[in-house]
Length: 102
Length: 522
Image (cartoon, rainbow over all chains, first blue to last red; front, top):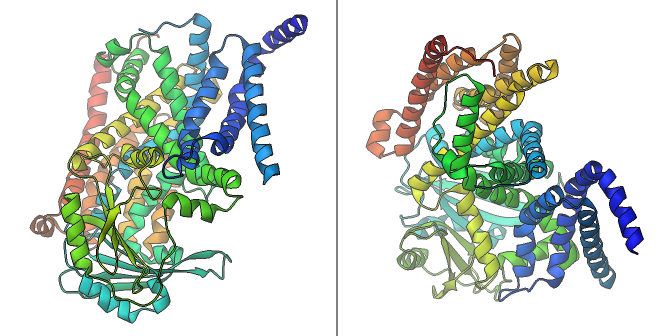
């Protein structure tokens, strides 16, 4: 496991520029859209029953900005790749589950 | 003082520069038109003339409403809206929903009356689908063109909104990266620009304007991206998950509209009393009134008030349309107060700067103009550093043409509007004049090494000529404006004349300064 991680880390470091472009570009965008899509499933609806609809839309630019700057600023590109991929997968599973459940 | 490792600073400098270089020209267009659009209502008043008496409803409306309601098709009483136009007329809109044979979609079908508040005379009547009615409102052509250009760069929906949303995100990136690479943020707020034509001088001015406008740029970018993405991306995506793709159901929930409880016939209570009661509660007159289910026992009247008494946002009061009883204060979205409603209600005043009248609007205009200046100087520095490369020299010329050309083309669209308003079709000619002006200005820019001096002369001539053209084509004269207390007409004319004089004086001053300060090798 440790050996696999160090191999992945070395591979990511060699391709850090390309990976950073991918993470800050398409991955940050997909992550923020998926976050906006999945938030209504877990965000509290609030007293008026609208907070879970409104806050994902209001926070979308902020979510994208956090994802973009994280991808640009984390020195450990392997960690950034793993964390952002994990976030995309978790959100995608949530959204897929919502569609399957109807 | 912010200190980052060298590698991160280098990365941020690249992000800051490229975000501006790639999208800077479009961003400049959105920011400059946005700064001007802060005064869109005033520009609407200035461009179409008339006797403005304030945008709040202070006159009796009940009698006019009942007369008009008797004459319209009963199906159009589904919803009634009342507001004031930029020229001070009362605007009564009777709405229903019908299937548009052209698009096949169910759309808002409306008949709109403009009524003199003093005599009750019907000044104009327009009927059709919402887009058709908009096409007939010639007097609003200039204002709407300006707002459309800012909101979606005249690109068809939803692509225009997505484009301006991306530009909002780019502005956030440029602002945040600019903040992080600032080594001396506080000191830079008070930096004194050096020299005139030198690169360090340009950098000083860029940093000075950017330091002052930094929080504002973030605010504008965030709220602007929200407005662009909310309709084009947010609502469809959230509706897909939360409402199975039914956007209508989502809007009903968010807006907080309820089905009419009782549709049996019943006369509407005195609307003048309801308006008076609501004004008394809010402390200021309403900007609009909406009646759902006119003439039914379930009628509800919503009265909208603008911000007043030091509040950042306006208020909405809900009344029973039959008993005229006060039902409560209605949040901007939803049926009861919530954190989401507060968040959304803050977006508009923070983006439009209309929460404290003229003072906040002027501040928003100035800060917006400063941001446009930051983008322009940033792009100029970017290309100046790369002027050894032929391709970047061409980009540099495109930057000069855009920086000068956009305000000139906007003035060109105003010329087209005024010339065609008396007899032509300003809805078509206003954007057409803008495009025509762009073509002429690009041709002018291609023919000279540095066209900025010629552009400056043209800017001066157009600014000085526009008030005269407005007057010659039937616009409100200064004496009429003074008598009617129309501050917008006088203020915009005087602003244009001042800008015109400054634009004619500036090339002479620049020539004198350059004669004294030789260009150093930087």
